[in-house]
Length: 473
Image (tube, rainbow, N blue to C red):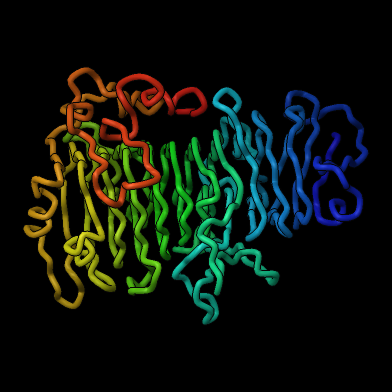
């Protein structure tokens, strides 16, 4: 078998071109499983110079923690597949100051997936993609505010697992581009509540582009944002085990067009949600306060019909807690045990953010949920109350709507796991006049002003953006 290695010594001593490939002599007879030629490129160690993966005849394999450092760029060309090694839980870490340049196309998406044979791939086969930047965060590390240590045993003696621009954060920081890409079967449970996710973002700045990304079979969360300002657009999460969009430590980015499709049989022991959001683990008033803004999300849970229960560990489409102030607009929540859960049980009351208009829900449709709304009071006894929450949610100016069944929304076939269709049918209330509204100040910039609720429109490019480059199998 012919193998190649990309590693620190070879990169710094032997390579001067943009394509960092070191060939190690072998028999060259092609005993591998990549198109029959057996060429493997093992990528490992600390990369201090830029690397380009561009040869579709090769099998690129991440071994252990691969750190991209020293301002280097990790480039993956359209149509290339990158594999995480099973035995070592291969993981790609883009450290502060470095960049990823993985820009696929609709017909040639980039795929990050498990090294296992396709029939044997399982959630948690490898560690996923970690991007760390220099933007703002409310995290603290070893007494230093504005800097955090990413979860999942990523950090080392060189500090390659740290995120945040301590002392001088740059909210326009640019960690590169991830576009038309799929991340599959990733995540790693190093310790309880100390997991790697499929896509882990630590203080990533808004100069970074993350668009048209599908995350499938995540072991823990599909995407977790620890601080930062990066905006996300056209995101699909499929059969996640834990949470789909998890936000912590002062994340304040903007997210538009997101599809969540859950498998009713797959749920994590920690209870799972489509959105889970904390200001920080203790619900403090540390700033920046977590305040992501979402619009045009379609968040599909386990209950296709009211008599479908699914795994008992499903909790809510959105659990907003621990002094978070995220906001959701022009969106659809379908088939969860609980639609929106505002949880005051730990830290400063999250409900105070709702009553002060820092946490806003407008033009949100909830369907087929056993409890469309729920509330958990503060452990100290402070109690906003479910009735007050219901009154707040149902204020006429907010134009929020609750439906008993999912069928009333008239999506084509949203619960078909192996071939879903999220396009609204004729007569869907999601495309009716006034269904969407972008007049709130939180939507003043950074959002396309479309005329439908949910992630998918009824016609044109807005109805097909999720097709072709994705995989539902």
